Image 1 (tube, rainbow, N blue to C red):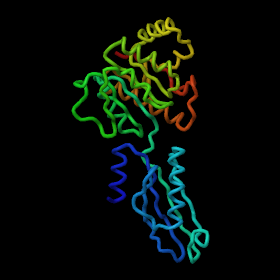
Image 2: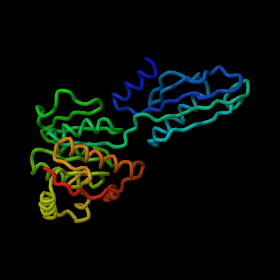
Image 3: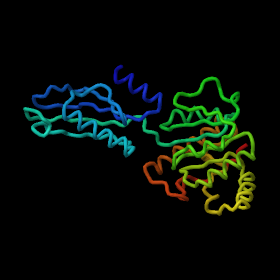
Image 4: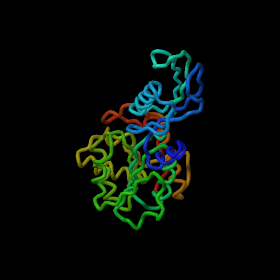
Amino acid sequence: MSWISTLADLQQRGEPCVLVTIIEERGSTPRNAGSKMVVTADRIFETIGGGHLEFKAMGIAREMLESRSQDTRLERFSLGASLGQCCGGATVVLFEPMGQPQAHIAVFGAGHVGRALVPLLASLPCKVRWIDSRENEFPEQIPAGVEKVINEEVIDEIADMPAGSYYIVMTHNHQLDLELTAEILKRNDFAYFGLIGSKTKRVKFEHRLRERGFQADVVQRMRCPMGIAEVKGKLPVEIAISIAGEVVATYNASFGQEVKKGETVARLIPSSRREQA
């Protein structure tokens, strides 16, 4: 399998990797500029010539994966005794992170807006779980990289999401929306939580959540209505674009920051004014 095929396969499966490329080599070395190696957390594909240089490059790549770095990196290795070479010289190596998800997203609801939204999210550097109890609501073709989850007890899926996840709730049932909201707010470790609905729905939910003992500062973290207000329209795709834009704005503003319990990460996003169905 070529490195191109390997990258495509890893992207399809949502597995992060680092593409390592020899950019320039000087001196009497057996390495060829343009040689590539793909490094994942537990495997390597292709080679940049083996030896100590490849070992060091693999270590740097895995450090980048562990830190979830999104930045490309150039390293200049001086060849000689330190790299086990008999001759001097230098090699410049480019490290390019690939497929590192900016956000882990749980989308609850496979209705009209969900079907418009999920393909947009799938085209972003995000890991998406699409959750509903109704199998017949999902389209026949699920976007590549999206995990379809059918569960009669959709609330149970919240516990499986990592800290700092994004939650988008847009089910067919207001009571289910409320129960999902309560469970997400109970965790209170999310980077983003959006609930589809109008300002009236928000007021009703806030009242019911207060009755359940939730503090105002916790409830305030809920985005309802969700989406960027400047994106107008009532069509499912228009609402979906608005929500996707808010997701992008959130992870651009906060990715790489530790999400502390109760912290409002979406603080840089303007409040939405659009009424949602």
